[in-house]
Length: 165
Image (cartoon, rainbow, N blue to C red; front, side, top):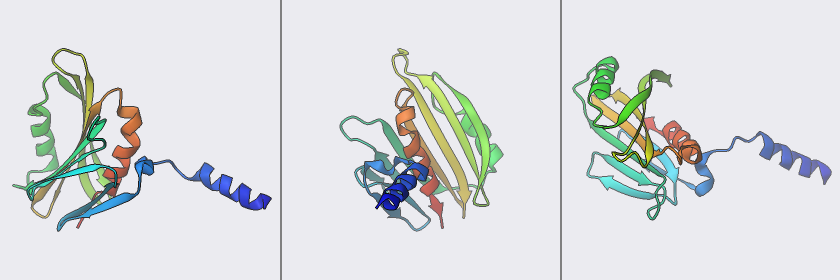
């Protein structure tokens, strides 16, 4: 009996905590990709181009958007330059800019921080961008700077679950 309790305690101590504590995970399968998110989240589909995930419809802390569009096959460095110059985010600056190699696939990762015009609500936007089979995929996470520590695990879980086919 003591050993069962000890093994159970050890299991919980060494098991990493993730953002999946909100409920069971749901997998969305598309022709070109799959992604997992909490089954409690609100899902809105944007035609055939992508999806929007909202963690709480009444009081959202994290909004996730995945957009898949045909690509003119710009390189990641060209895309990086374009996104940094024309981010469309006023009152924001890039605080992270890197090209990651995940599963043998290069992915652009940008992080922007800023504030609304009245400086009342600092925000954070994380973007992941990848080119695959003549399509571009952009995964965008938006939240307030205050909410970021609470939603960081969800961002990691969703971005790690994103798989190209």
